[in-house]
Length: 205
Image 1 (tube, rainbow, N blue to C red):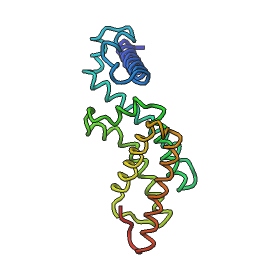
Image 2 (image 1 turned 60 degrees about the horizontal axis):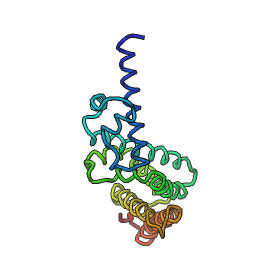
Image 3 (image 1 turned 120 degrees about the vertical axis):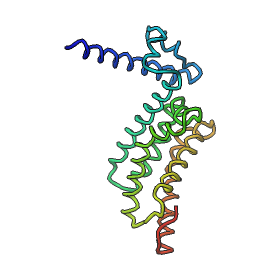
């Protein structure tokens, strides 16, 4: 192995250790406990070593946001394997809310306005694209032509975000919120089907 290859591998390993340590702190203690100094201590490096990989805390948080959306994307892709088109959509709803319940601190930073909105949208795009693909497949299966598929996808995403937020309330909880998310998705989809059938025109979104 060449010296340059070994150094590149060591650098990648160091970066991975930093991300893992940051994720652990975030998931167990929350965003307030996440500092460059704390992460440096946990991985037994000096703070300047951490800064070689991440310019500041914001850059590190954005990396965690990207990681969170990657996890969510994995869950979405698994749900997409469901053979029934209607069941796929409700599974997406359930998995979204389940993710928010299992990773509350990570989910919070994934939607935190302190993180640049354009960057949040960029790292969320792959997961949103999966939802959009599933919605397109669903609409084709039910002969529903959505006037604005992007807006329809935003309606579904926003609905799931709202119900996931409800899951943190003591009188709701994650299990009930998952059921509510499935019911909400079914109601929205049924509404689009009903509108298309009644009017004989593309469903509004």
